[in-house]
Each structure stands twice: as structure tokens, then as C-alpha cells.
Amino acid sequence: MPELPEVETIKNELLPHIVGRCITGITLFWEGIVRQPSVQEFCSRLIGQRITNVARRGKYLILGLTSSEVLIIHLKMTGSLLIKPASAEPTKFTRAILHLDKETQLRFRDPRKLGVMWLVEDKNTIVGKLGPEPLEAGFTPQLLLKRLNNRTAPIKALLCDQTFIAGIGNMYADEALFAARIHPLRSGKNLSPEEVERLHSAIQHVLWSAISNKGASVKGASVDTYLRPGGELGTAQFQFRVAHYISGRLCPVCGNPIERIPIRNRGSYFCPRCQAL
Ligand SMILES: [Zn+2]
Image (cartoon, rainbow, N blue to C red; front, side, top):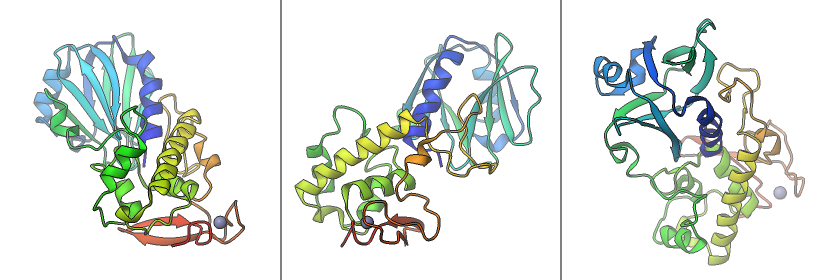
């Protein structure tokens, strides 16, 4: 699933192609992609608008429009946004096309059809409940410590909870916990201030590093792979130390086999020696 670094990369790479551009038409191959309002209203309200801005909040992309409404997009498990010339044939997994002026198209590609779009007046109706942004100045070790107070859930589950902290999912939670040497099942409230400081720094480090590598395309040549807007793959997966390990991989620090345990139905990868309970 695209997480913060992937969505941030998509935002950065879409910006020069779509800001200032006018939406001239919409083609929906899968109407279920429009969550709000009705499909008809979605199309009639969007057509004729100019895109004024592209922002990210957590794993959501937020496109500002001249009407001051916003188009919010969540890519879920397998969504990508691709910039294509109008002359290119849509492919099998193209679910929606935003036709832009100058013969350009913004295409929503989504093999598993889980991605969603909303057109709303107030973005907070969709993103208002998200936790703090981990790369913003307000996210300090003190804030993280405060938010962990009384939280009994496993730290891995908290890191993946979008209302606790925005943008982190399974891959970057595993990477951050490994870098901070914290077992994924530790209860949030039991982390020491020193561990919280390590975790804070690890979160920022793994996210920035993944952004500089344009996100992670972990599934290689599979149709479900994350793609950048130009269709390229990200390379952040090559920096991963535990996330999405292949069976039998050894810890890059101590040589112990990496283990996998289920936490809230997601596989968590960790080194039982470096991240002892
Ligand atoms: Zn280890």
C-alpha cells in the first residue's frame, strides 16, 4: 500500500503537471471509485474547474480547486495516479480519467478497485480525524510521548493507526521499530522516554530516506506495484532492513533470522534479538 513516502512522491511529481490545469472532462470506467457526492454531481461539479494546488495529509492527496472545493484521493492498496498524453490508450486497470487541458490526462490506475475519490467543500470531513504529521515541526519526541500515555495497544498497531499518527503503514512501522530496537508488541505506554526519542528519530529517518528514494515498489513486476506518476518504480525497498523480508533473511545487524508475527491481521517483521521484549 502507498504510505506517506509514496503519496508524498506522487504529490511532488504531480505538482508540475497538474497545478494550473483545467479539468475538461471525466471518464469513469469504475463508478465505485467515487465515494462522494453522486457520480453525476461529482462530474458536473469538477468539469470546468482549475487545479490550484496539490497537498498531502497522511496517505490522502488533496487537490485544491478554483471553487475552493477539494478533490480528495486515497489510493488504498494498489492505486496509482499516472500522467499520460491524451493519445495514449487506457490500460486494463485504468478506473478513471481526469481529462486536462493541453491534451494531458490524470489517470487513476487501480488493479484491485479499492481506491476512492471524494469531492467536498471542507477537507476536514475526510481528513479531520487524522493524527499528527510525522515530518512536520510540531511532531516532537515530547508530543509522541504524550500521545503514548495510557495507550495499552502494541506500538506496532499504534503506529499504523491513522488517528494516532498519520501516514505510516505496515512497511514503515516495521522499519522504524527495527531502527529504534523496539519490539512491535511492546505496549505503547510502557516505552521509556529514551525509547520514545529513538522511535521519533527512527520514524523521521525512515520516512525521509524513503521519500529521497521516491517510495517503495515492493512487489517488483506485479500489477499491484506502486508506480510514480511517470510510471517509474520507487527504489526505497532496496533500503529496507526488515519490512517485506523474504523467508530466511537474516538481521543485517546481528545475523539472527528475521521473524514474522501477526499483529492486528498484518504480518510484522522484526529481529527477536535486536528488538527483544
Ligand atoms: Zn538483529
